[in-house]
Amino acid sequence: MTAMEELEGRLIGYRERLPVEPLEYAALMERAENATEEVRWIKDQLAKITGREEGRSAKP
Image: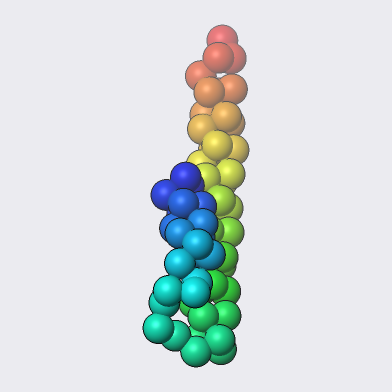
């Protein structure tokens, strides 16, 4: 998760130095944001599954 957020930050920081058109940059940022959201969703789902499994194993 942190790596994706770091990538987004770097892309924002390098905006003026990247040889891309504004539309290309916007598309790149949108894809990076979508990827970050997907990773966040997967992380949340794994946490839910893990929590359920821990709850099952704690029952006598």
